[in-house]
Image (tube, rainbow, N blue to C red):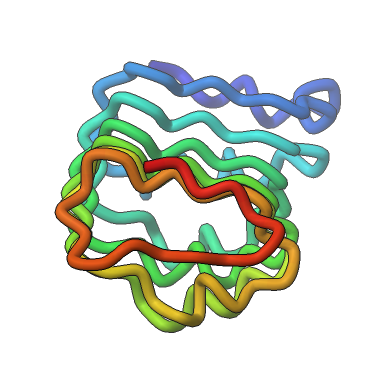
Length: 154
């Protein structure tokens, strides 16, 4: 896969980058190329072999990030630095818990946690003011969660 094409001025105007099902295990070799896309609004990394992300991904300015169907055991810390993030898809991973740092995602509106190994949802997530949808289907939750003005999908 050749990512040198991201170095043109035209490609810096890309708003949606689809790297779905590219068999990526490590984004380090291409992270600078991805980060150079100034107007990137949505990044789709669904169906790869990712176990984590590079720390520099906290510099992303995307509103929507799809990390579904990877091998994440925890939410990469760099995600909590993406202040523009409104939707994150973490479905079909191996997540067992969610860091309290989730509270840093002040603009988060929607989170998909479908089919993980979560036993509980932290209060920090439920306290996010802009959150309007949480998908927690297919998780071994020990108790039901509630949040006013939020659609919780079981």
